[in-house]
Length: 173
Image 1 (cartoon, rainbow, N blue to C red):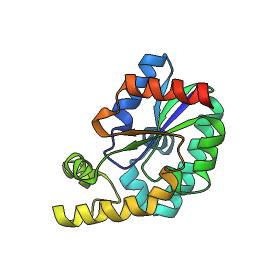
Image 2 (cartoon, one colour):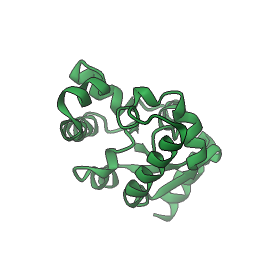
Image 3 (cartoon, one colour):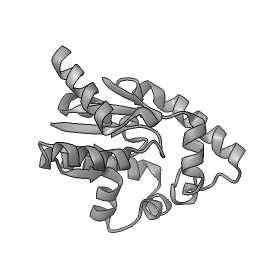
């Protein structure tokens, strides 16, 4: 089984992903960490040196490598991963995308502390501007996120809730 966690930065993909991987006894991978390991430099350095277009191409390539390498995995994707290079199609064809839907207000609290380390949020200079950026980003990405057959909301998104969702989806699908 491949379970792909998608959603905005700060949605909890990595945290929940690690717990789900343990529960299902599957390897856990964070796509951003995979990119950093394979590029031997940080995401911020990749953005600064090569730009977003290069990063998105590299992200798509590493995603395909991870899918090819691991028939069973829980993968936390980057927030923009589903939105580029037909990545959402790949996720739908090879596993179970799970959209972690978190209210903007909660995302704002979570990412404010780490905004500087996130390239697409690093230039935002106030809480109001950060909220605006998050709202705009979510509006642009929702068309991709909404294609996920599994959806879990905010703090209700626990390992048990995801297990229930997956069970129901597999039985009915």
